[in-house]
Image 1: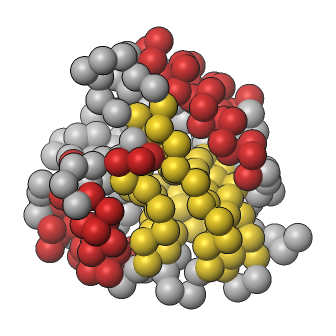
Image 2: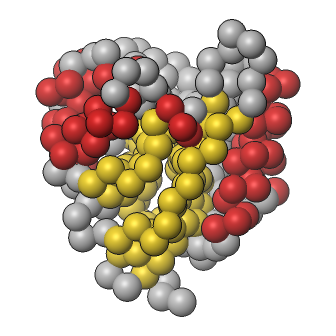
Amino acid sequence: MRGLRDDFGALTRVVQGAGPDVVVVQEAPIYLRWRSRSAKLARSCGLVYVAGGRSAGGNLIMVAPRVMARGANELRIRQPLRDPIRGVVSARVEVAGVRFGVVGCHLGLKPDGRRDQVQAVIEVANGLGAPGIVAGDFNEPPSGACWRALEEAGYKDPAKGEGEDTFPARGPRTRIDAVLTTSGIEVKEYGVLEHDRADLEAATDHLPVLAVIDVPKE
């Protein structure tokens, strides 16, 4: 969401329109008052700020009031000088008595950097155990090495590589954003969020991805 530099009203309408239990965001605020600004965003969407922001490389998790967060972590990944900050945010959440792991990430623009970063993502995800999801901007299409690494780690693409393009929001022409799930999760619906096009284009530069999932009780 580009550090909240776009249309804040459109952004909140898009999030509220989805009626989500869990929201994973990339490019959350990372500069002045970044944590309070992240919490304000959550409140404006009718959600609760769980973790993330600068301390997680701009990745952020928010949840609906009915969702319980059972622990959260923020990881900064060491980057070369002057490169954008990168990181991973994660949480174990509980909805109606069912628990699952959530991981948010935003991989870099350089292939070598992405390969290192995705290993950090996999390590964090493995630490939460299954069932779980990894949601993020992977900055490469489904044929890329990082998608394959995540699949080998047990995180599958519900669209099987054939989903809708997500970037840019105006005239999307590539699919680089996704919600990947472990085999313990049944995906009921999946795809780019259906919402007013003007709001989607004003809210930020990527299209949001919605996954409706069914998680079995342990």
